[in-house]
Image (cartoon, rainbow, N blue to C red):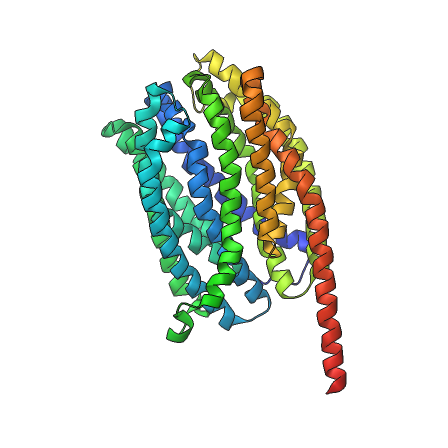
Length: 458
């Protein structure tokens, strides 16, 4: 089922597209949190720290993999908005070839380098073995992650945000069941948690691929359209690689920060893990609005309706501001309950430190909302490199905090690291967005003048 987002109320379209994304992201959080909750409650604080301490490294790699999938979908959204279905099929076919290639390279490289990187980032010795087992299992399942994310990105590019939600529901339910079976029945510990994640992701990927092939007839390419094309691969990589690198660059700052926090001990790592995981639940709507803006801006750029893009951005910023204020208030009353999902009530010091993390992060959700909307809009408009530089700003901020402030401020520095990174990124993104819009307006005006001259001469 496709959805044309080039006509109708921008706010209604973005919100209607956003709601399934929001539900899907929440279930994806639960999907990812199931490992953390079940490990923390049934295996122990050491295992919780092992799973949580790999979070930045996990996002460094998985974020790159999912980022390139999202980037590959941008030319598809633009082609769909322009109603150029031949180009749409060529982009889809070449995205499939590229995904296979990237999947093989990323999997082999990360599995080989997992242990050296864990040692380099000063993972505490008491959790190094568990961290390695968890992370290398997740990395071995990267092809499954790519399959699901590529299929979902294609569906969203064509305006369908509901079907990816259904497949995520399948994955979330399966992941929780497998977590409980592997950990409580087979006593497989962190390996069982990681294996449950990989298998459930694979199930969602296969199911979404089957649906995509059966239901989206517009994507059925001919042998000629399915051949690798240097032009289309280059265009896809021009969008996908910056988005993947943006995620990895952002995560790289997190890895440096994590290395500094690791030096504070496994109890602090556990508190940071619980705080970050709990906070992710309430940041999901902001991410969903941003993802909706990628498709909305991409389709409308393809239709040359830039005024609708600006309207959609302004309305989305207003919605995110209202939500950010509400989220801060909600967390004030629910933070302890969320943290207790991950740790036992007897872990009073971990709970106290996790609450500090949540307070500082939620205080700056307004900046997070601005960052997400501008970044995703720039990606949809084809300026993935600018979005990547925003990731560089986040990385610089986190490296600064990790190298200079953790030693001076201790755990407080870890609490303010993300807010500082969000402010740095916003300082770059606002002028970048204004520049991109002005450039596109001039380009579209020049196109219109050329059409007028061509019509007059004919």
